[in-house]
Length: 402
Image (cartoon, rainbow, N blue to C red; front, side, top):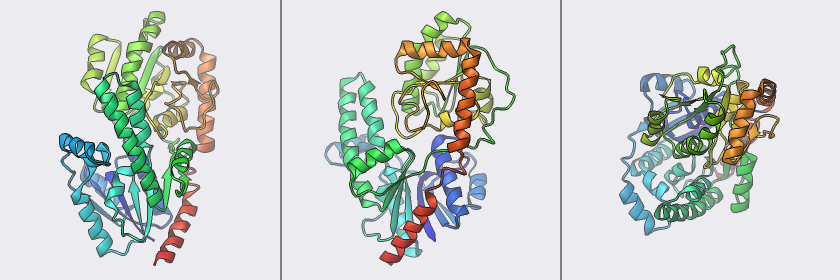
């Protein structure tokens, strides 16, 4: 079965949540005999090594030039049309042209679009199987951003954007043959909004052999946060944590340190470290495991987001005690006080961190329970249970349309 997979960028090295989800999905498709042509933009630091590896999974890898994004032009276009700003910003004539060329020159049985933004590249007249491979629900992220935004103009623009995204998403979910999402929470939302949508759950996973609880030395009173720090939900989470939660913890435990591990920290995040020597910003690291492994507490104070967080799965796999907001761990089958501590208020969140710091029995129990959950439900080699059914549906639809 020949499939065109349209992605944002090269999914290797799989060094962030977005790329990991795409990489393991491509790997699972390849292992099931699906012939893949990968079409994406070039965003790999070492393109040659990335291409060499991806060609072991794909029949062909086609790279197009990234679109030069003009935010002002996209904003003006969006204000006077039904198209969401975030979609207009990514709307690429070159990508559409290349997709049309691929579909014209090669006999593809199916097209898979990575996330809602790539759906515009698939021509309406394409009669093959169309699958949307979602990472989250964008309209929810924007709506939650609006809820946290203090600037009235930005809040209003975000609310308008979320409404436009809702309509665009619903139309797209109905237009495609099926949508794969990463949690039952997102599946329910999609099915409630798009009555004609066929939705499968393909959870995020983790390689527990790689993220294993090896003999890392514990750094007492150390807190760690990992992720793409430049992504707005992560920036918001850290600003919220440092401004409202961290002072409560520091007052009780003055020796506490906060490690911020991840690429592209913004100027606001860098300023946090300049003002407090107990806050350490690493920037991009090749291997996050030592930072997670040595941490006393792993925190996920997210207020904006959708989908599921791979960072939580990785920390659970390494037997870390985690404190998360309800947004931070939504979509993952965790139980409060069993696998982690879920706290939403600043004081409650701070007290939960302090409780773990003071209670080794609690820390160890949470770590063991979390690791067991990973082994039972979230290994990458077990999360693709629905994929065989999806592939059969793709084949059946292709024969019907053919």
